[in-house]
Length: 137
Image 1 (cartoon, rainbow, N blue to C red):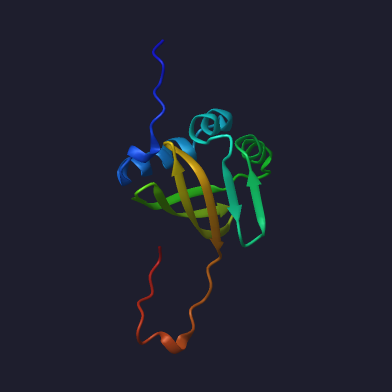
Image 2 (image 1 turned 180 degrees about the vertical axis):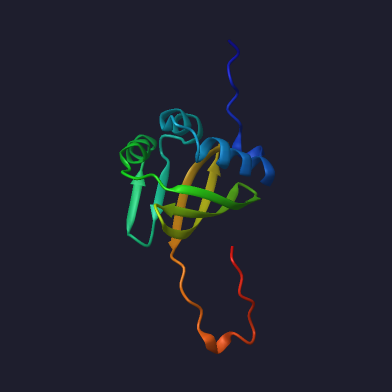
């Protein structure tokens, strides 16, 4: 059996990075394989809004496995610039929908640091309606 090559994430363009998130990062049923291949041992994931930091690849894998209701995630886009990725997505926790932005720093071809921001939708004030377009993302 041929060994599957783990991509150097720093070599991916935006289209390949989008494929990586949709088909591997957000979809792989084996988080151990995903984290082993794509995160160094000193990986850090930060969630500033809740004041949480997960330190280490193994802790992140365990967090992922223990998560009670994994959301469905719809990727909007991935921007790739010099070892930095910005990921825009929509999380759906069984009807509780929020926008998510991930700022990902790469090191040695792997996800080294990951900062996540979540925002729930809100109703736009009427006073600015004359200058804006209403859109659905």
